[in-house]
Length: 206
Image (cartoon, rainbow, N blue to C red):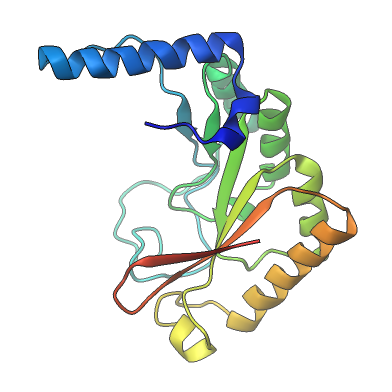
């Protein structure tokens, strides 16, 4: 339940008060051995779309095992969600089981969260990191991006990322990092994520 130091710039007095209530409720719950909820969540997961361009075998979206209808979140609905939670939310994961870049308003979503002082992170399969999108990512105010690679060659990559192109992902990573340097931007933090043979996640940060 620790809040990382890098997130404290997103903590207002009201958000700090909410955090104190959360922690107090948590410790009192342990003492009383019953749930005591005094605060609101300080993080939120928002799914822009549950559609994806790949067919990954371990993902319910990719392997078609989910029964949830495919769709994209309406931007006005997204704004309403952010307006409802912005007084206590510090951190947002703007992804779940879909590919965020398939949503046409993704950059507007990120920017709206950033304007409302919410640290926002997305996860992507890396197939949409063009020069244009890389520039938009940086200018949107995105703070963290996880890129799933899961291989060191096309042969090993496609075992997990069915339908994906390993060279496209590598080119996209290089483009994003180069654009970030060109614009002299600290953000987003780029995290390259992949499976090891023992199925643990490994991460490289840039």
